[in-house]
Image 1 (cartoon, rainbow, N blue to C red):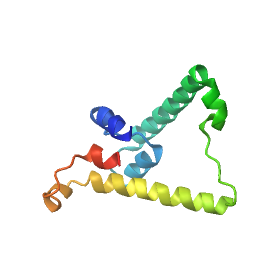
Image 2: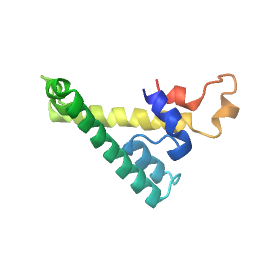
Image 3: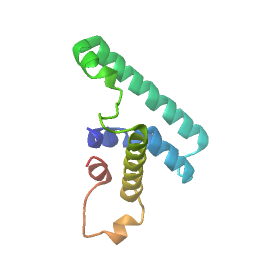
Length: 121
């Protein structure tokens, strides 16, 4: 699904589908402040619309999965959950930076894979 979303939105927003990625690209000076804020607002509004559609059309799944909110598994504390989120976000952002590195094609010319495929792993 991530592959499809990145591929479809690459021409519009550069494939930004996650506020964490947009924020990191802003910090790396690859997008302007105004564009980053507008992308993050659009991403959050899109997520809310998606949850609204699930709630409207699949109420049983919405209730079964707690509205899509993440929960910390039994036996773990909030510190473990925070560490897992930090590590997962780092891996996501690192993957985006390495997949979209303009020098990658020269360095990895023996691996002919497009960026959306790498991001969709």
